[in-house]
Length: 186
Image (cartoon, rainbow, N blue to C red; front, side, top):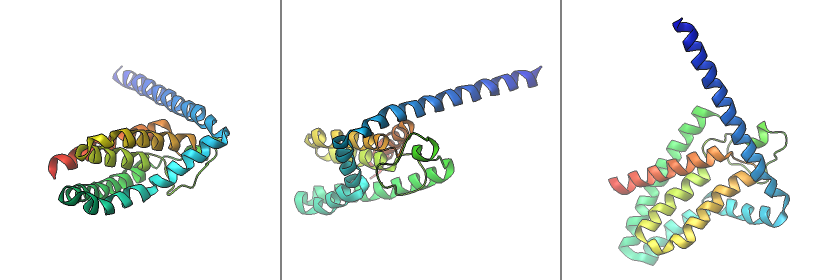
């Protein structure tokens, strides 16, 4: 009797997992459909390139020169956060080894270059959220610029066929938690 109940729970769990995965793929397809519009792909392509690290490296390098000791303190937090993020990102990617949408969905193609093989979590989103939170902690007025950029980064990853919505959500959550941790500890 116990074994049957356990098997029923497993079957129910498997069904929920499959249902969730199909919803994730469905939302990927819906958002990817925006890639039919050239201006959207060009805009999100540029956002994707900028979020490869360029924006963050330039910002970190400029902070001590622009904002003095406060900028240096922010820069050091961002550097530590970047190392924490890369470590979490690499371990998580290898552990889950989730294929990207363009490799597992016949109707989705990559509209931008990928930096690695796996999809979960979105590293671009992780960094955009984490660095935006740190910068906005020091300079709240930058929120009007940084949060829309972080949202565009997240959206770009799905529309360009590189990530599922759950990859982006997980990247945002991990980035937020890592930034909160660094801000608390340093």
